[in-house]
Length: 399
Image (cartoon, rainbow, N blue to C red; front, side, top):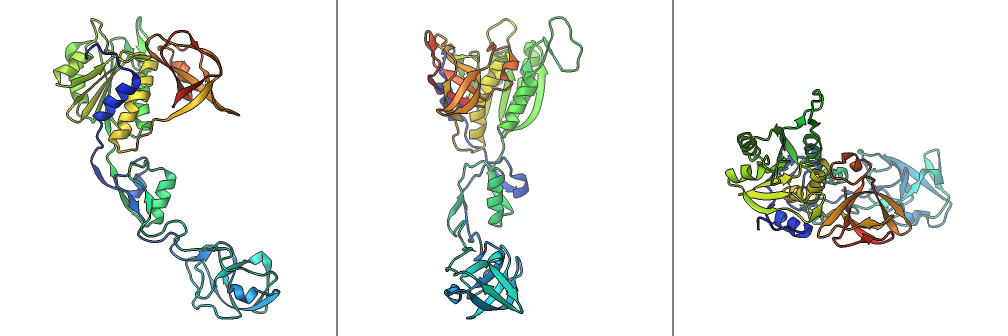
């Protein structure tokens, strides 16, 4: 297994087999954005809670306006938050505001611009029908209806629906805690003076940002040189998180110590190496419920492997429903296949008459981080010989 080169779908399956949802706890609604529901939310009350007006105007009995013009006596007012003090009888109307409770006895609302009011009476020029401009109780959600299913990641609309149900808190899974380590003697912190052989550390910025975007909570970002003992110490600290991610030092070179560092801490290797370009030298292991990823040091490779493998794991740990973020697009230009490996090409997406169109970004080298600028997706080009022709449909992973 140590030298097995997995295809992407096999790798994803093996990762997800180890990614059980984390425990859940109540979360205040105002802090629940981006959290994932641990249980179905069922409406206990109707939404809207009462029949109300969709317009400013007059609440009437439709039967009273069957033969217009109709003149009705105005006997009160219903405002939002202040219902009318009495119900409606034959030949009567009650002024009403948008969202205000429909008075007892009324079954229709006539818009203000279709009426004229004078001396305590309102004249209605056109016939009204029962239910006209009335919002019925429970029209949005009925009691007993599932409002939002478990596994849903909460966005602005979901928070609004939960608020409409009167919920101050909801039960959500914990956000996975992520620790990131970047490895390499050559790495410099941005702002440090450049030195011969040095490069600025980009992975310590891209990978934590991707983790945050995926709904995780980054608890530490560390950098370590090519030293076995220092690498072991850094990995040991990272394994206190739910997910430990090490960028670089995961290959087979003399100065690559990450795999040995994971083994020293009893992290069991699940797989090593992918049939993927870029991102082949990727490693995954587990220690009890802690997941460990060794990502390539090349900046594009690290981002690609994160998108394809780590992001699904973080979503699964957060209890989110499966979301492969895949679509189909038409290639705008031919793309070379890689023998024995799936190619993940950074591309821009545009919407055409045939659906999505994918245009690969120039300079696709795994070290060319600027190729990620403007990229909307990864075009997944199957392994093989020759090229996939322009106009062919391919699967794309949305970024």
